Image (cartoon, rainbow, N blue to C red; front, top):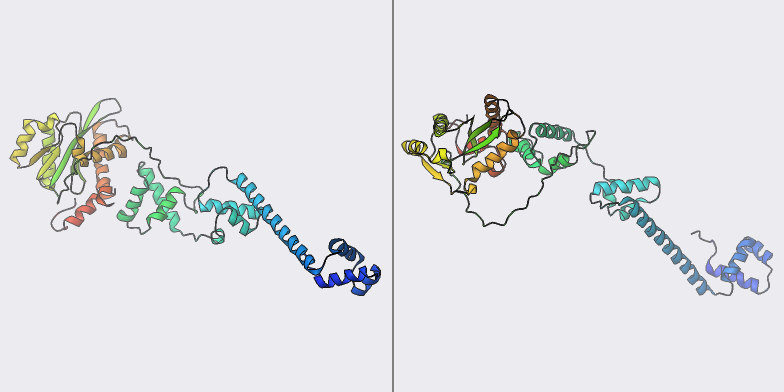
Length: 378
């Protein structure tokens, strides 16, 4: 509001002179004011004293302030109604909307920050871009292209523990979900995991944790089909200590003799285990395999029928085999499946982080437990 060069007492003195009979034009010439200003004062403050005049001015200022506040509140409500079609929680999105309103000239920076609930520091923040973001994005795209069911967790552990990069999980996660500013579009590599209803069951007994290599092996079978519909069987063997895949043998039939041949081949380079954990399949409970185990002084530990959770290490490994590659490709022959399984085993043992081992690979776990001079990593 424009401030007058006359004080309240001066205005009241001029008006009293007019009441005493001094002509208005003479007063205007004497005090160097316009005739319009004089009549404006008389219509507005005529009959008042100085205190009442000050009170009127205070009320005018208060009224102007309230009108401004109401206009701001109404503007905020209108903009929020336009912009917030759905709930916006990300500060970056709120900052973007505030910037748009300021550029349109509808709001000041202060009012925009109050409207969209961000600080002025956040509004003025300019991110410091790093060339590492483009490198992280490229690595993530390569990993998810080769390993289609890998999520953020496995990708981060692979980059951190296998490749030795020092990026923290927050930075990798931000690029995984949002993308890199150096790229034309967002990555959006985060996979949505559909939740499953779980039945309430009694808590199972915890599995015994092996204390060293060749303490306990777990074995199990899997089934699948070739492209022409013929059924194949996979014989899986892992070392429970470091979850290392020791063998994946594929054939149309897997009798006890074939199982023994596979185990003998592993023992030649790995050494024999103290115990083998398995289910109650006919190939595994027969006299042929039990006689072979007794000959080699290996304990056969059979789980209870109908309780695969007692052989959880191999069951979890079977799931990885199924979802990492077995369900993703169509194979024409046994040799093709065996060749792919052998290559995948190397990747699993050397490059795939294992959550059960704290995010390291089976070979890294083995290297921590056994010196290189006493055991070959293969």
